[in-house]
Image (cartoon, rainbow, N blue to C red; front, top):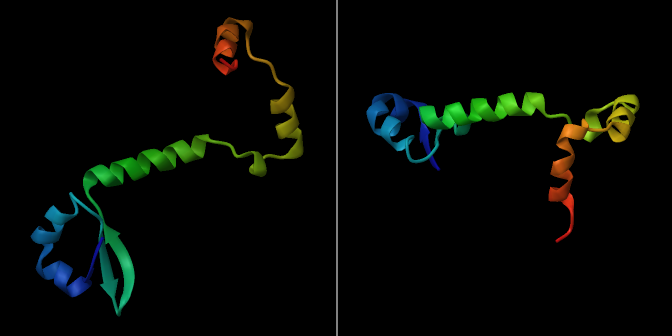
Length: 89
């Protein structure tokens, strides 16, 4: 990853815009990273992962009641064929 000052970034935007297609560009201000410049593709991927994260539940974050309800729940019998995927071969 390349790190450059905000001043250099502003003066050479086209160059770093191209570079962001290959790697993330860190923008510094006062010697500290103040942000990152990424490609549109990388940003879209980040948004996709954030959306996925919102739909995932972590066992640590669940109340005891919800965790227990998940533990004892049963799938609809129409999905029984998927159990074969869990069997040791």
